Image 1 (cartoon, rainbow, N blue to C red):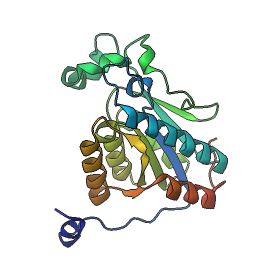
Image 2 (image 1 turned 60 degrees about the vertical axis):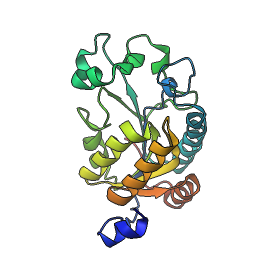
Image 3 (image 1 turned 180 degrees about the vertical axis):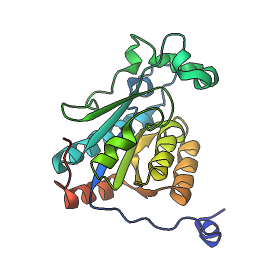
Length: 214
């Protein structure tokens, strides 16, 4: 089906960004960019990581809140429940795994928010929504790994917690181009606006300095 088909069915209305954004980078972990890891997402992940670095630099320059998540799973997967049983590849995020480390240049700095999670959404079982509401954030720019998994889950929960989601397409990566395209399309029709890196950076430049992390 085409965009016109979706529009005719009542999907894909436009969302307007607010004046108080935050950046959410979901799981920018070496697992996705290191060919030695079983969940390596291929060369597109390297391009996505580079776009994330540019987006992160723009957010920091604009002085907006930055949230970066990482996955930390117990050795036996007990804290990830059915998710671990369904995706045993999550062992890449077990204790001491080098693949659980942040991609170079994508670790949080002092004063930025780090969310440690065991499930796909950055909001599930965490205090992220409370933190963003306390900061009066109205718009969340989203990038990370993987588009079809944790990025999608976090985008849906961004919407459900009352923040306007903008997925930065260049700054998201998945292991299959068709899966990447399908999920971006679906998110754009049902839960978020899609921006490329340039549009996101131009927006951050316009609103820079509006919010700071306490």
